[in-house]
Picture 1 (cartoon, rainbow, N blue to C red):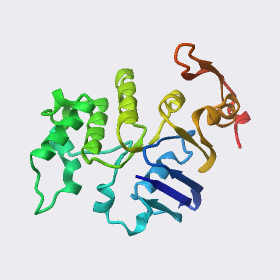
Picture 2: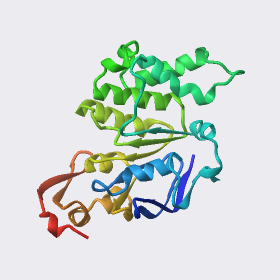
Picture 3: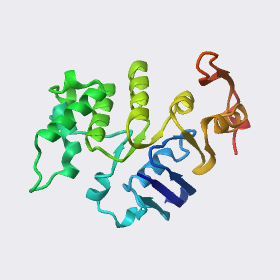
Length: 262
């Protein structure tokens, strides 16, 4: 399922917080969105999800303008895991994940055994089956994050958008989640803070700086020492694993803030 943006912009407080962003995410692709704090990553994801309206430009899902699609139609095709998603405190984990089936249900199609199987599979994929009957308010931040992702998976989306999905997760669950996203038969777009996660788990990387596209391409072409120095203000060295050829970035130090300003 394809997702595209053309000359996308969003204004707030009298200034452009996102401007001139164009991209096409091809079916089955894993696109990572990276950039310093305040560069527009979350804003871009909310526009791609159809939650916020752009000030300029257009988002299309399977060739249809997002403006012309109902929320129900979008939810049947696209799931979005926000960075600060909220859920009613008195729900159990299973209750919360079952909400992911809502776009597929109506009076003629009530919740049934097939939906239960989908929910069970979503819980298992994020290692939350043992906690299915726990009340939401008893969960840790990482457990809540995994439950939100399970709810998104229960939607069975063609496009999965995630805003810093590894936030609050321990290292084991970070790696397991990113590996899961690579295996899923979906188009995935995710904002990431960890540049090595973007390098190892994404097909392409979109680098934002001050609300504009600074670079877009394969990780090896975007995540270069020179670009990272200019945009993030840190010195890195590239390490290639001799066993599997995996490319990782080793941070060597930072640069004074005044030297990194546009």
